[in-house]
Image (spheres, rainbow, N blue to C red):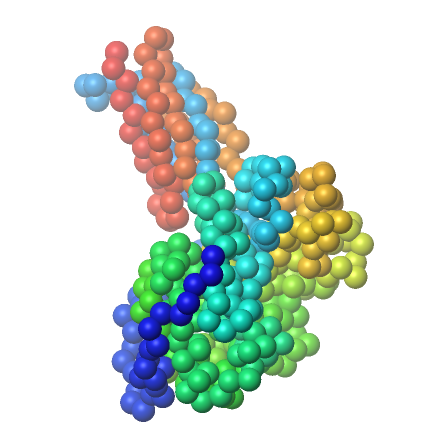
Length: 426
């Protein structure tokens, strides 16, 4: 679909800030989340036992409130709460085998390249969202959670060629138009936006528009799509300690700088392009970033292609286990969009016929492990039945004799036991 830009915004939309900004309401909310999640971290042991489970106690009674002993109880988890997914590319469109393989496993996705500026506006003023629109329809149809990646990329290599030639007000108008076009079209469609990608390593826009450019991008994005969570996103933060530009302290300092500038920064994105993972280091980095009180996502996880597939699978399992069980990690996305001839950025999960490779087997095994498999049982002398379940949606049934009832239950995060009352009409 080819479109023209909307009415040219004035320069005031991205004007340089001269006064200190008040603490955003969302930042205050983040501080409240921090107090709650510090308590969660205190409860976690040194091995970070999964916080993705919760105790459930089911009470079965009759219409008079009398306990029913020996009632049969069935438990079936029908969906997971923890977002776990993969990047997808245009190759999934019109490919039913790929689509089936994907939706059977994942509840979250990100578009590999199709939302990036160089993909949606190759020539100035000629917008094309056709592929992104089709991919969004696919994830919507299957109730898959989509992340928005990305609004801007600070690396000039991945900035549209025509943008690299702009300066001053001309560039300011172009970035304003980019935010307006992208976020007005997809307002409410994407749960996250990576606002200014890889700003620890590159500074294309800030060198041209001034040191407050990123603050202004966040402010404009928050105004355009106020319910989306706005993320920083960068690499080599959790993967190792060799890159001085992306040390944990550098990430924290940049976040604090953005917040002081009034940016509506609400999420921490860690790409996770690993070589051989150092799980102890990964844990320490997540612990430290967790003190910021913001959601943490592993956004582009893979293992370097320099390893053979068996070693990729081994290292992937280490990373996924640590990420899933860590008390600060709220979601994981793999960077494994499949292209022809079994090519991916670094690591594939399947071959072209959608037969699992070793890394795909790891994903399937962990998904099985992270699903509640309780078949059920009978109520005890107190008319109760208990189990520990992974967070998500459940179908719960209770029966005795010819009397039965079925209900749904949402098992959300919480420290207290979840109680569910079921009444049988005898």
